[in-house]
Amino acid sequence: MGLGPRQKQVREYRGQMPSPGRPSVAWREDRVTFWAAIGRGAVTEDAAAAAGVSSPVGFRWFRHAGGVNPGLPATVSGRFLSFSEREDIALLRAQGKGVREIARRLGRDPSTISRELRRNASTRTYNVEYKASAAQWHAERRARRPKTAKLAGDERLREYVQQRLSGAVCAVDGRPVAGPQGAHWKGRNKPRRGDRRWVTGWSPEQISNRLKVDFPDDESMRISHEAIYQALFVQGRGALKRELVACLRTGRALRVPRARAKQRRDGMVTPEVMISERPAEAADRAVPGHWEGDLIIGLDRSAIGTLVERTTRFTMLLHLPRMEGYGVESRVKNGPALAGHGAAAVRDAIAATITTLPEQLRRTLTWDRGKELAQHAQLRIDTGVQVYFADPHSPWQRGTNENTNGLLRQYFPKGTDLARWNRDDLDAVAATLNNRPRKTLEWRTPTEVLNELLMSIQDNGVATTG
Image (cartoon, rainbow, N blue to C red; front, side):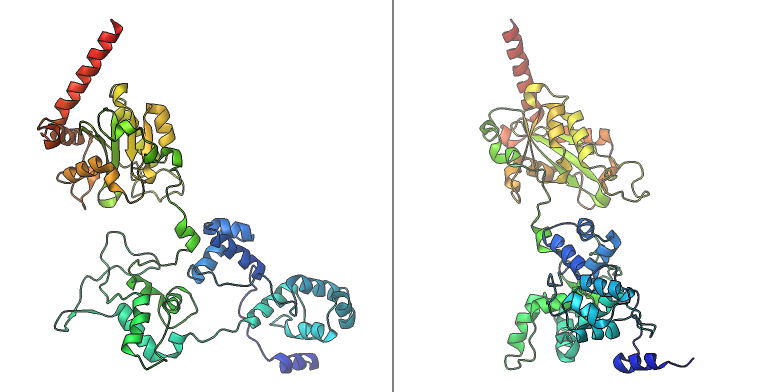
């Protein structure tokens, strides 16, 4: 089928353009809104909702950009047509208005409107049908001016970077050492508690600065560490394959926006429950009833809870069995932790265990920053125990509990499945520790010291009532 005069004129003006696909579902303003929300620390779903697009679109934008804000300006220069102006052009064109009339109404030069109608009309036809969405799509696609990435254009530099990043590990004599095979990279973070492939593993910053040492007089052998990171994380930067992110120390598949990284994962910890607010009597161990707690973690997300009384060193263990459906049912977002040590399970286990003690021995509980005690407010209501949290990265503030956990590792070594043990097994181990003499207790056992305290509490109670 031959071309008409008008179709030949359009082809001569802009050439035959293969269609790059359907128009985008959102424009620059939407992407700017999306990345602004990401910059404030919002999760991808919330950022997509703020931009007015679906969650899959937001996740695709985030993944294609490698978690890196592309830095789009909020608005284009006024010398370029905006999407709203293109909508007006399409509407006036449909009403049969001429080029000069449209230009006059928009306050633009007629040549601008004429060029817009020819250049940004639909792609696959030549009758110059003008739609605002297709025109905006063409304009944004044509506005891209991608530069060739430095690593893509310099093979020598690329080989240097790749060798330091993913090169083989060698013995002292230069013989390659295979190491473990490692899991196949599936676009996710490194495997948890699994083998990773052995590589040279220089960081991008080490590579960038070492270039100045190895090539002091060759200015072409220079690249910033940020350029290396972008070559790894950002799709379309070329040069380095995405799976090489597994060679980084973190093994992270996507970069974490800075605002997200600064967010505290322990938002349930407020100033009034910090260890600095704990009564002074808990620090000198003179008054019993102040406890320290934590979890010891085993294989396949198994866990055992530990409670240790500061004065007597008396230990109680929390049985945290896996819930029905663990390993079979898929994980439900914001659903119960099937591994057995979610916030609700830990709260119930502590309440069931500590309420077996007299009220005088239930004063405070000091925990680390784990999310498993996010329901500490309800725990305080259920048991009357005031919960406090230690400072970040300060295990010495819970030294009694940390030392006890070290003793428990004799019975529950790291890397073993702790879900094997039932309630009776945990009670037996706890009884073993509680009947072991302690130097700090003048070689008495925690059970003996606790019994003395209970007898003292009972006697005082009888004397008071008399």
